[in-house]
Structure formats: C-alpha cells, structure tokens
Amino acid sequence: MNLLHKILQFRKPSEFKDLESKLEHVLPFKPHNLALYQEALTHKANNIKDKNGQKVNFERLEFLGDAIIEAVVSEFLFKELPHASEGELTIMRAKIVNRKHLNELGKGLEITKLLEVKLTDKQMGHDISGNLYEALVGAIFLDKGYKGVKKFIYSSMIDSHIDLEKLDKKISSYKSYMIEWAQKTHQDFEFVAHTDTNKGKSNYFKVNFVLNNKKVSQGRSGSKKKAEEIAARRAYYIIQPDKNGPQKNK
Image (cartoon, rainbow, N blue to C red; front, side, top):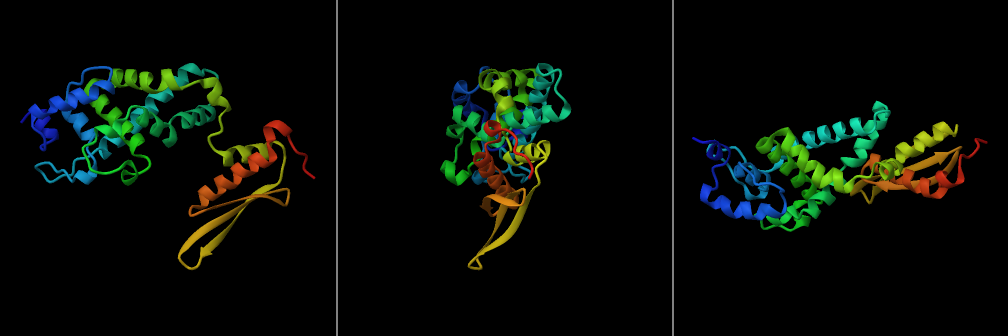
C-alpha cells in the first residue's frame, strides 16, 4: 500500500486534483504528498476514520506544526539578536508565536475556506484559523522538510509581519510588565483574589491590583490568571508608567 493510502483512506487519488487547485493561493510551491494537506484541512466534526478505526483530522499535524514554528522563530531570533539573553529571547518569541498572531495569519490565508465541513467559524472555535495554520506547517514539514517549511514560515510570518524594533516595545503580558515595573521601582504590590459567586451558577474571580496598600484596579473572569491579566492591564493604563516614570514608594 502506498503512502498516500496509508495516511488517509477516505479520499481517492483522483479527487486530490481539486485540493491542489485550492491550495494554489495558500502555498508558494506545488505540494508533493497531497494526503498530508488533506489531513491538515480535515475537521474532527467530519468524523473521518482510517481502515484501522483511527480518527483522522488536523490535530496531530497542529501539534507538530506548533513545535516547528517555535523552532524556526527561535533560530531567527537567535541570529537576529546576538546580544539578547535567554529570557529576552523567550519573551520576544512569545510575542511572535502567540494565539492571536497565529489566528491573524490563518485568517489572512483564508484557510478555513478550504475546510470541507458544514460549520461556521464560530462553531469551529475562535482559534480555528491559527490551529489550521499550525497544521498546515506540520504538513509542509513532512512534505518538504525543514528547509521547505522554514521558507514558508519566513514568507508567511517573519518577512512580512515581524518588525523586531516595534515588537520589542510591544507588551505581551501586562501582568509580567507591571510586576517587573513594580520591582524595579521598589513598589509594594500584590494581586488580591476573591471568588465571586454569581447566584450560585458560576464562580468568577475578582482580582485587585494593589500598589502601596492602595487598590488601583480590578479584573473579573472565570479564570484567575485572566482576571489578574485584566487587572494588570487596567492598572497599566491608569498609572501609565511609561509616561509618568517611576512612582516613589511612600
């Protein structure tokens, strides 16, 4: 049994011709193993299984693509920022390889239009575009190798979307930023969390950002981590540390 049939059993080779034409606006090259791309563009809602009863969808390739993107971006940053520390490189990579950015890349390529599934983008989830971008990267890696997938990531992500100077000024986590700022300027701070029960139905977290024993802001979310981030972001815009400079600890 050839590799094409070994990977996927639900599509005949003659039917891949339509897929190849659809991929022309997404890929800057002609794919070799179209079965990989079909897998990358198969939603689990299709409930497709191979002859062994194993489910076939984009999720395994998404897992692989996630690792490949991190590797390529890490190599790029390592070469472009020779004097950056390990911690600085990690922060810069997080600014590039984040869910919001991957979603934007996927939407730009209109990858969801290639899915053969009767679901809206909302039904498929907010992150579907980014997930499919990662799955596509995984398919390209298996089809074209590291050199080929690196070229795709550079053309679709790095060359056209990354400005290291602007990125360096971008805040990826307001919580991390406010903690670092408070420590550098010797401020007393803490995130104070409370559980907020909404008529016994759902538990939410209310988190106060307290600076020098004074409440500055509050965040509320079903996730404590997200509530902290909201509180920190609001505190940032209230204090505006970049404009006002450090506050003295009273």
